[in-house]
Image (cartoon, rainbow, N blue to C red; front, side):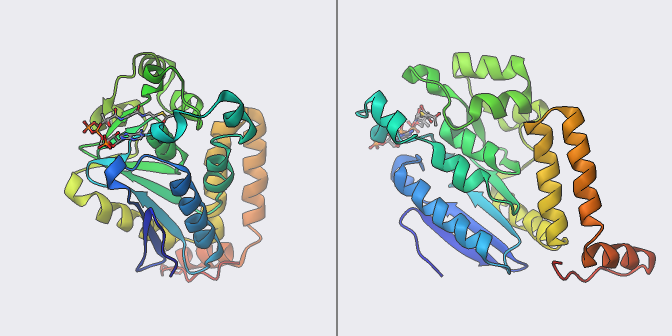
Length: 260
Ligand code: CAA
């Protein structure tokens, strides 16, 4: 398996890729190398039919403490524009059609919070702290955070977080709808892997389409999204796995999936 300068990647039982960001000296700050490594790791995950769900995690102290400020400090505005800085995150991670979970312990700040929100959902350790402190650096979220955070937690909490830089803890993040579940820190990674194994055991096409449907709620108007949802449902009914899934239910046995 490929090795990466800033990531550890393991394949776990049941078709789960566990991707750990590993830049402890910078609290996993997201520099160009992390983006290049995540792009390559996601591309390998997407291309490998044996891998059905991924987990992205960090360390106990930091999921990621933001975009790398030391990399950005001397860049001119024209450089950010010409490089279309941050566009690679959307193109290479968000565009992944297969499911992935963010397992967050410690700091998820700025780009770290934004990376977690790019995942299909977030599992948080009880130590997790989410924030968008960019305002303190004279900037604002640049990897989708102002949009995804607002849709996840609503205007009031998102606005307060963006305007004050206040971090919210795991319980507040759960109450606000930012995270799916909170688990004890010591159990985070194994619980995320178990959850990913549950998803990986599902019919893979249905997993991709369920993901696309829920994302539609984020990305389009309700009437159009409901129509696209209905069409995608109708397309799924053409798969062998749909026939198998419904038959297996009626025959009271587990389904056996072909991925077609
Ligand atoms: N970029 C670069 N380096 C970072 C970093 C970042 N975002 N966050 C932490 N580091 C580095 C520190 O500079 C420090 O390095 P040195 O030992 O070489 O000085 C090392 O990681 C450890 O950090 P601290 O000593 O600061 O650790 P702490 O426990 O005292 O504080 C913290 C932890 C509160 C997370 C603090 O590090 C911090 O505030 N980090 C910056 C958070 C931030 O502003 N993030 C937003 C970045 S901008 C952004 O993300 C834009 C966007 O929209 C995508």
